[in-house]
Image (cartoon, rainbow, N blue to C red; front, side):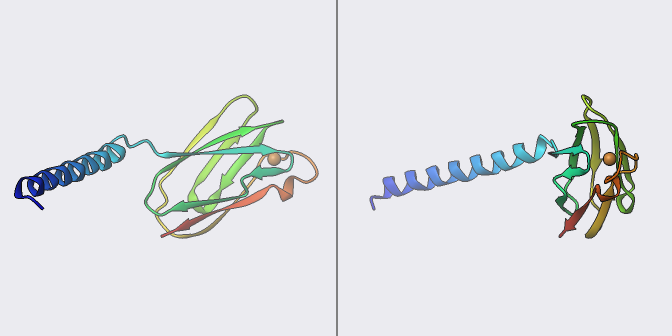
Length: 123
Ligand SMILES: [Cu+2]
């Protein structure tokens, strides 16, 4: 390679590296947590299994497709009323790994007891 061309290559490589570093900083700096939509209806939460990463903040956006439900994950200290036409936002910053069951805690009919799921926190 001609020395000048070589230099040009290094400059280009540095530029790419700098842009990549900036991009990484920006995407971290925007700080917007991942949003996970969750729907409730008789007698099911969707998704039923929610996988999170320890230390990574998320927001659950809970909405009901029929009537009032309750979202309760005691192991994570989370509870929210889930209503039709109104999004309930629950912020979670998982601190420990494990499987944390959630259930509907507003009696919503026969089948209510099946309205369960789990949040799995992984490393
Ligand atoms: Cu329910």
